[in-house]
Image (cartoon, rainbow, N blue to C red; front, side, top):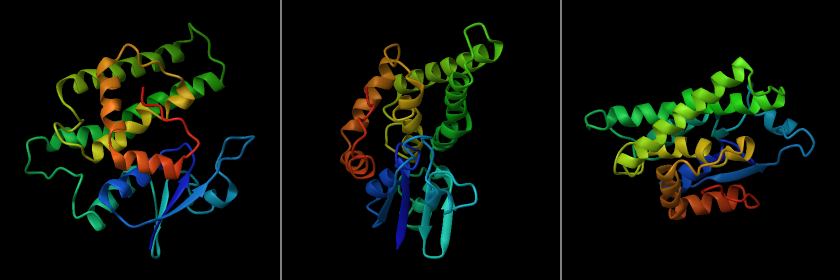
Length: 213
């Protein structure tokens, strides 16, 4: 039986959502963050040597990393659905946005979180670099969503599942204002209309206010 070990307010929401979109039967094991530190509890950290979310177990398999898990689910349980095949013209777009999420955007936004924790002030060169990288990323995303309905083109794909977290829930940590990005806001409205997303958030993070605006 596939088990999704879901840490509240984390990238593991992607995996719950993917299972709902693909109609994959799964057991949801919810884990709450420590109220003082905000970190994963010891039981979650014990699941995988890295001790970070997300993690799934599927029989004897223990797998971490949301991108790897998503590709595994699509290939093993989803009959290739939500992926774009290499013979299609938007294959490269699909690959770019699937990997841009954690390869560029998440490190950029985590940099903003870390700079706040370190108390970096305006005028700090490192803070300026991080802010510039983040602004360029969001400008690129907004331009893309002004041209297409979803990141890979006209259809919803796993690239959208990867990209949504830094545009939505991650803002609980970064407090980013989306007012300057109308196409991102319109995109979030399209995601809100997806029943599978609503089901995933209701079961995985029932107390979390969805950040889709």
